[in-house]
Figure 1 (cartoon, rainbow, N blue to C red):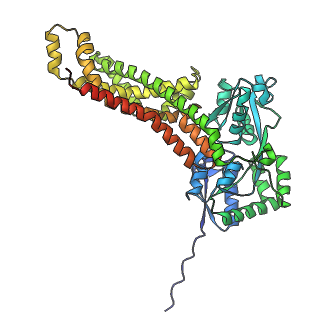
Figure 2: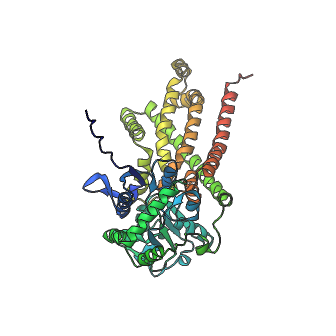
Figure 3: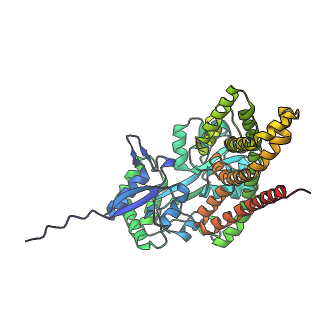
Length: 483
């Protein structure tokens, strides 16, 4: 009896990573089917997969984490407007460039004659994406008085530009031209600040697959398939024919930030670390100030909310209870977005003020529950005894109930402070570059999380351990028997 023929095996997958949050023309959800993605990076990934005899499978990864995700094996390759930099080449296997971009300045129409170049922006705030060539350029320009404002996406820099929160945006011409079409009122300056290239990024040990992908890209350049994709998504321009001709002739494209562009070799990883340490320390200082101010406001508000819920009239108790439940039942990230971006049409809060307010309002709800529980934990007999002695309710609160409640609340309050110190990392969505955000940028620029992550952890320990030690000392002191 003949054996049944083996079932045809499906072709292997090519897992590729990108972040759809940035949107078109790179990668975005298909409006007709949100479960699918579309964009010129999607079509390039499909083209490469077909050339390799594979089936493409998309993996959603945050933009700043694509390199690390590919390196650990979550995907075979990353396609997402990833820039060809010395740090990326040192840490990853990168394909040949498939697109040449220009870093360009975008300003408000009213400022087009005043801000023509970076030199004109001394003393101004300029927005960009963190961990990119543009961000490095702005950091170098800081000596001229330019303040780099880092964003996690390429949408809010332009909305903040129109709102006046930044004076210009420095980003790739692909992004700038699309935002200009979508947001009237901005102008792109004709000068080119720098030139770079997009590449596919693979794990360090994937040289063979990298070479296969590069050959597939060269084939698509040769027969015009790549040009057709780029024209379809309206990103083909006069810069691309020269790049394609150079690569097809066996030449190479200069690496952004390399010897060819800046006149000096790319710094070694330890040298880059030495340069970044002062920046990390400044970011740690921002984290400390932000956390202390936010916690101070949260404690004051928490005391008022707890007192209102314990002593207030019924309508006030219901109102305060509703506030507590609303804040505790919604994500803090959503609250930060609403305060900074959602209310921008009514009140344009500075980023740091919005960050303090968002953290304070959130933690005030949690603090109020701690204080309310501590107030209600004081024995009723003590309160009745104080009333019998003629104490007013205010005197009972300040002399009897309050001090005991504070001692009961100290430990959980300290825990909340340490938690807030770590939750302060979320305010990076409001362009506040605190310690975690600066670490992400550092890691993206050197292509590794080992050194940046270790330094970040040590700095957080250095900030949180003294606080915990001080709280334990206070607890021991208050528990000690009095003479």
